[in-house]
Image 1 (cartoon, helix red, strand yellow):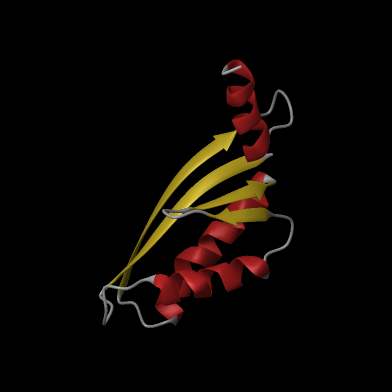
Image 2: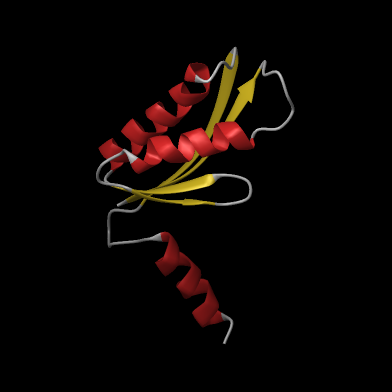
Length: 100
């Protein structure tokens, strides 16, 4: 399972506030099949099979254009572990276990 951290930044917007764009992108993610996602204060975490994660990232990147942005910058960090199942929750738990 792939885990991606995605930040989409609309550029050329009428306001410095981006919350409306972020809300639209969360609606786009809700329509994507085969993934789970979690909004954070600075990005969105997407988990699922690699092909479906890339499809969701492409949909996220397109979303601000549909909402009037003139330019979009998208950053992606990808963790694709194939030796065993992994998830964001499992990664956090692994670190917390070492803190005990």
